[in-house]
Length: 80
Picture 1: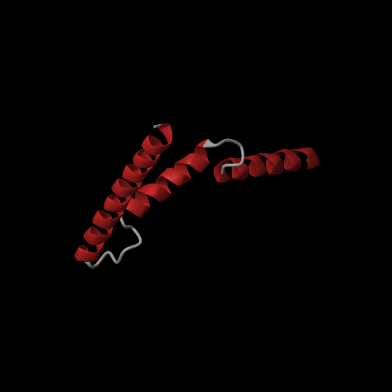
Picture 2: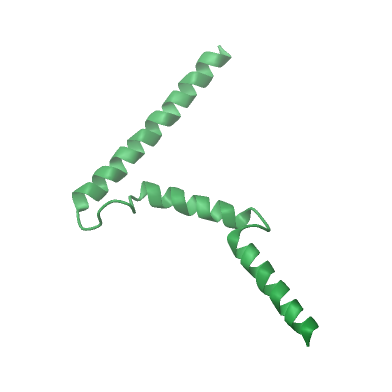
């Protein structure tokens, strides 16, 4: 009886750790990808104000474009 309870508790603990991403990197990567998607789709902006949502999306897209451009420029400076 006590052994059965111990086994069930161990399985629950392993399931919880697996859901939290402690057993592999896949849940962590999925969470990070979801956070990036939410950031660029402006989930944190006021959903009732369409102008704010689209303005946030455009600004974040332009910031990403500028960041990639700066990284490429810096790599070009270092390699030449």
